[in-house]
Image (cartoon, rainbow, N blue to C red; front, side, top):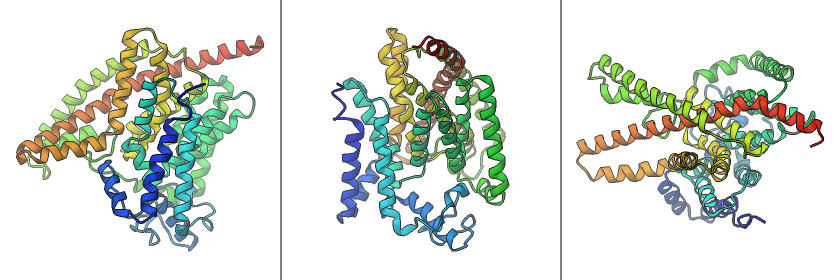
Length: 430
């Protein structure tokens, strides 16, 4: 028996996050807010702020209000910036149901983490615990953000999609439903590479037909949503490929554009070209170096799903920190490969990748501490220190995306071969 089964990261997380909620519900709101803020998350006056946004949109939509332009039911007046599918059945679940809805969502998310492979060593347990209690996960849990809904759907759908028989198509239906809710999970159609060519083409055609149907039904609302997708400063907790070029341009032009834009563009291009060469080499090295033979099919599928979502999100848009919960899907696979390989260089690569992921999952707290340290220095030095820290953070993100892209390419390339080998085993009665 796994001795970490009962002293597990999900169990510890349930106790920790449950304790935080107990502080708020028992009247110790200021202590609750101080702890959340010190953890690197900007706390609101009550928990589950993002679930409140969804419930408020449903409440006003039921009253006939166009929540895509303005939502007076929302505590911050935020318009609905998500798919109109969230508004289906809007006569149920409104802001009065916030606390039980938020608790239920957080509880299901934490319980679902037991579906992932559990650590079998002390080091793996500490890594998993560090990720589960990270600032990114706290952010998602404290806000009860709807990315937790996406996490739950793709986790269950991923497991279904590797079952035998027709039941696996329920998994692909789950991927499409997640995409209908939040758009970016549509990239999971790439997992159909594990199917026979005819089946894969049918799945792609089904996804395409479903997307066309969504636009036909919700065209007006979707046009508004795509026009108001949130974006912000590259120096905040947002992560994405656009941060580095946009941030470098701001650093060299100044907030009012006092420096020549051409110089900023040239410097940006030079940095990106040099870093692209480094990342490109990393992608090739990782694609050649990784060894995924020891992965179980569920671990392989969740790893592939997590990589597709993280890489797709990084290169397509800016992402708020809570989307880092997707790292929880790939950490078990990385730990498994690090444990299984006898090659010292591969072990070092996997461990370095895991360490970088943990840093980024806690980066908001690290940034808070660094800013506090920099505040004690003269303003000119403090600004440069903060700027250098930001550049370092963005380069770390790009290095990690290079590693993960190389790993994803290997997994996608192996899918047809894995399907063929599994068919041979099944034909032999294995």
